[in-house]
Length: 263
Image (cartoon, rainbow, N blue to C red; front, side, top):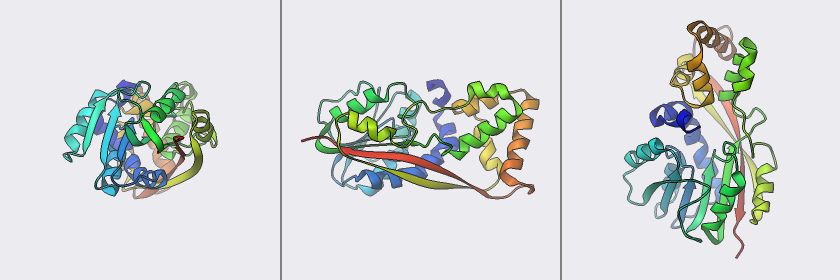
């Protein structure tokens, strides 16, 4: 999976715009408080870090991600001395117990094989009384950027079903809450976060897919020229209807959870 997300600039064009739209709403739900030390687990290219920094002018923020390209990109992106980035795994966070006032994770737990280990690590490094929060895409079709692409790909090529992007964990209502309770967190609350994304044209949607990011991007890159053209035209009809081009809107839903480390 790391290779699919190794190009940070391409990731920004494809998925970063969605993360940037979601992050401020997630930070509000997570109840980030100014002046606290905050950890972002699976920080990617820094959308959540950026949102926390904008809201919390005095907070120290640490982002961690296993992908070297993301860490290098984020270190160049942020000059704020309050912000640092480490390369490392969510399953073995390289921090002592109770190192942070809050630990957050955005759009990560539905992609990894053992989210329970990541949740336990987030609890371990968070101080008693501190918040631990996460959000994932709603797996019941809540992420239209991916679901529309895969739906059309499978219509044209049923074999694409075997390569379709499928969340593995924590992607249905109640699953994040159950995980948080099993991790021993208290005052667990869940919510939905809905966002919309405006596209200026079909190419605004299509060209980032061609950069090979994520399962959809890798699938499209592997297609023949004829297959790629057929998918492009099928998606154009789905998204634009009878129009030749123009703006359109896609929507997405995230599932979010928040809990408190027992004192």
